[in-house]
Structures are given as structure tokens and as C-alpha cells.
Image (cartoon, rainbow, N blue to C red; front, top):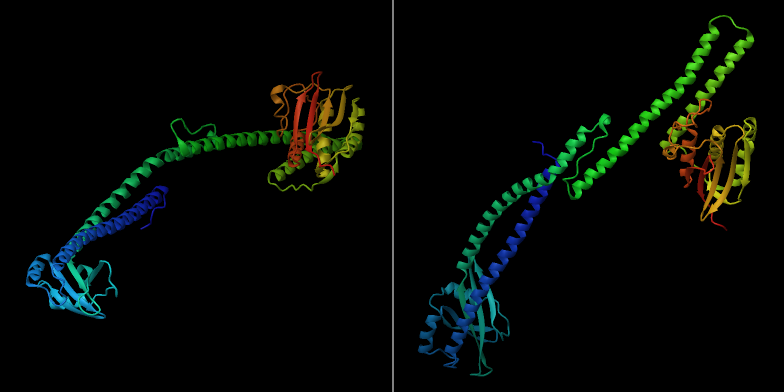
Length: 471
């Protein structure tokens, strides 16, 4: 039979085992305490009888024999043995008639202290029988060297053992009932405790990829179950965001790839409709080549972002002068700026170094300048400057374009996102991956990137990198 491995079963077993061990420990302590107190009860009785016997012996200090009166009085004191010790030798002076001869010699041979000065308690066992014995010394000065009398008062522990046996049987029976009740109660209690978890599981099963907008109700939950529901709800929210981004990403990628592919297809179809001159064929192939370059650029960017998401892009960090990168990229974009009649200027550079990968830092600056030049109209301006801000080094790229709607400022670094306002003009090339790549590279360098509209019009992109400590 297969043993269930549910949490409810495991908790029930652990609770039941703990209860069993607890009852066993309590039973052992209780049994020991009852035994101790019952024996102590007999000890007090034996001590009282021994004091009575001492009083009887004090009436006659003779060490030779007991008087008839003393023997008559000792008959009423129960099981008693009185011996005299001479060095290592011990002889019986008196013993009760209720003591068999066999027991008499066995009890006398029971080990006692060589110099008995205080009462001593012993337990003598023989088979299933047990007796409690008290040994009380009586000093007497009669005769040479003195004689020590030892009084042994014996009590049968048969009632104690019977009581202990009944107590043990009763406790075992009650423990068995208690264990069964504890297992049953544990199973019920654990079931009630796990009921909210079961409801959470059932609700979580209902939430699929097509219904990630649903949430687990948590207003009636408390403690850990409420924390579990809130954690799952946050996870579902992240999954919903991720699924939405994936769907939007897929749709945007399909759209961006469909357009150049359709252009290539149309160009080929039109070109092949009837014979063309070599110049017309060359023009058609140039058009196809441009669209292929566009598709290649999109695919390369997508592959890069996919590798970045999989942590397969490794940054080789080393001290880098950001000012040299800005100068090189400004010079590389100068022709494009002049072609569009845009004034591209570098206002202020700083020699501070940062820890970075020079290749990818070139990509960041290039993407920012490309973006600024795309959205700046002819006759406008783009400027670059650097600033120090505490332990950070800032790179600011200003443009005089139409600006970005406030609601889109936090989304422009998303993949394939382009604002619906005047910045998304038909003549603007690009698919909205450049800023997403720049944001990822900046994050990998431990920095941040934000966009803000300028009061006089246009946009400013601010990138921050941790500065290298000064030597």
C-alpha cells in the first residue's frame, strides 16, 4: 500500500509522534514520582516503628539477652530482626516469628555499612517479592570493646508493586486512547489549518496564461497564508506584465519584419513584370539591399537582447575615459548632423574615468546620438555635456525635437516602443530597439538612464555611471 506524502499526512504523523513521545516521557516521570512517594511513605512508617523499638530496648541495656517483657512488646512491632555485631561477626538476638528462617539469613547477609552510625534504607528482592528494610544502629557500652546492636525493621512492598503495576496498565491504556485521539485531532486540526492553502491552490489552478489578470482573494486570510496569497498575486502580476510585453514584442517584431519583407517582395515582383534596363535592375537591387540591411539590423538587435536576457553577454570592465568615447561618437555622427542641417556640439567634457566595457559604451553613446538626430528637425541642435554628481559621472544628450509625452517618458526604453505623438513620424527610421539596448548596457555598468522634457522644448537623456575613486 502506497503511503500518502501529503503535507497534511506528514504534519499529522509528526504531531502524533511528538504527542506519543511526550506522553511516554510524562508517564515515565509520573511512574518514578509515584514510586518515590510510595516508598517514602513506607520509609516514614519504618522510621516510626524503629523509634518505638529503640524505646523498648532502652528499658534494658543488657547486651546478653532481651527480657521477656521486651520480647512481648516487640511482638506488636511487625517484622523485626535485632542483631549484635562483634567486628565482622553478627548474631541474631531477636527476630519476629513472621520471618521465615530462609529470609532471616538472607536479610542479615544484606550488605550494610561497616560503621553504621545513622539509619540506612535497603530494598531486598527475591523473585517477584520485594521488601523495604531500615537498619538502625544501637550503641551499647556493656562488655569489652562495646557491642553494636542493629535493628532491622522490614515491610513488604507487595502492595507498592501491585499499585505500580495497575498504574502502569492504566497509563498505557489511557496513553493508547490519547495517542489515537491526538492522531485524529491532529488530522482534523491540520486539515482546518491547511484549508486556506487548499483554496489558494485551487484558485491558482484556475489562473492560466489567458487569465493572468485574475488574483487570489486574500481579504479573509491571515498570517502566512495571507503572505502566500500576496506573493502569488505579485508573481501573477509579474507574469501578466511579462506575457503582455512578450505579446507586444512578438506583434511589434512581426510588424517591423513584415514591412521590409513586403517591400522586398514588391520590388522583386515589379522588377520581374517585364524586361528592365541594367540601370533599373541595379536600382531595384539597391532598394532590396537597403531593406535586407534593415532586416539584418532588426535581427541582430533581437539576437543581442535575447542573449542579454539569457545572461550570455559578458561585460569586460576596465578603466575607460568617457570623454574620449563621446568625442569619437560626436565626430562619427557629425556628417549625418550636417546632412540634416542639425548643429551637433560637445559643450563640456570631463577626464574622469569609469569602470566599463569600451565597446558597449560606444554603443550607448551612438544610440543616444542616433535617437537625438532622428527626432530633431532640420535647423535644430543636439548637444552633449558631462557633469559630476557626487560619486556619479553624468552624460547628458540634449535635443531640440518635439519632446516626449509625459505618459511615455518611462516607457521609451521598452523594446519596440515609440511614442504616438510627433516623435513617431513616418520618415523616422528605426524600430525602437536602440534605447532598450542602451538601457540594458547602462544597467549592466551599475548606472541609470532617464529621459526628461526640456522647459524650452526638446528632450534631455541623462546617463549616470559610478566614477572610479581618485587615486
